[in-house]
Length: 460
Image 1 (cartoon, helix red, strand yellow):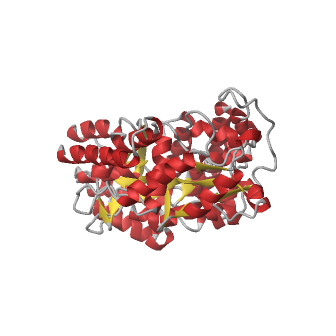
Image 2 (cartoon, one colour):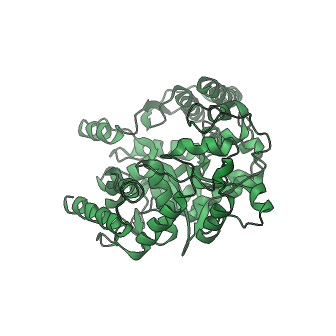
Image 3 (cartoon, rainbow, N blue to C red):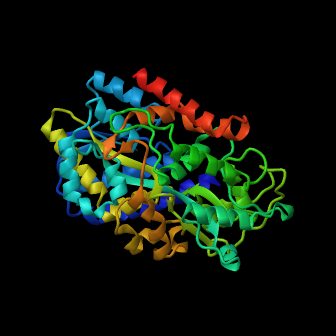
């Protein structure tokens, strides 16, 4: 199945870019590249590499004085590999990776912030979703990278069940809890909401989304731990209450099977679920009885997409969206020609045709951080027809999560790198596990987590 998906994505990108190349070849003058740049990306799958290489080839047709070499680097290894490359004076000129990594590289002094600012101004600050752009803004108002794409987390819910029961959309804590209670009917194998109930990234992502909507902060803008607060206790208490309306046993992202088999009213999930809802062959992986004893499998429900709503921003005491932004970063080289060539390449990738081709590598998993893309007909013509199944109104509502995107990494407009270290040490997911599975009182679990954050903070 995955190979089939990769084939279609690669074929589509090659087709679009090849046409572009054929049309422009006759216009390009014969020339030898005078400047060579290197582009690193954490998109290492062969199908994605093929798309990126063809985009680079298209760029070189328009810019015959520049040559580009592409290298895929594992996300888990890129920090180590980049450090070694810089030490050896062999660093890339452009990188594509998670925004938190680029922030970390900036604090190491590796990023070309002035060049980044020029590119953002050229593209137009006003066309980015503010939440995505803010994730890469430093305390001195400089930018360390350019947001490029990402995924949004939200609550996917049965609109038809909500309407039948007179329930409001789950856009607030009050509405989420009321719907979970009303639609939880375990006696007939129906559950109110999917909540992560084991120590893993899925649980951390859900807790973080709820916590941000409650105004929880891990650190103050001065770097002091503020996690041990009434807001955090309230969030963990709410999380535990919601877990009682979740399917039985330890639950993680795989619990989406319950939703796709018609046994779940709501689930926290990223936009990676979009193709599962839209394409039967992709949904098939969740329609078996292989993953849960309670599930026996089901046929694909062709009405499920129509009957599914999505809320990307949740309100507790404030409105908050949650997701991950991937960004492009310009590195310092000390070579003006290279830095100028790198900036031209990044500007090219933001051309509408190139940008949409990139997004179509993973429909749903790569969403635009630019406001106008969901208005463009080309956006809805991915090879598998995923986006075609979603109306403009629905697509805009989903990506609007980038507008209110929040993070523990920012407090009162100040970047807090220590928050990334906290996540790397799995503190939140372990706290959730303590409260849900180890019978540790909620206040104590929160205090334990805050103490661990203090230890990490003191060690750095």
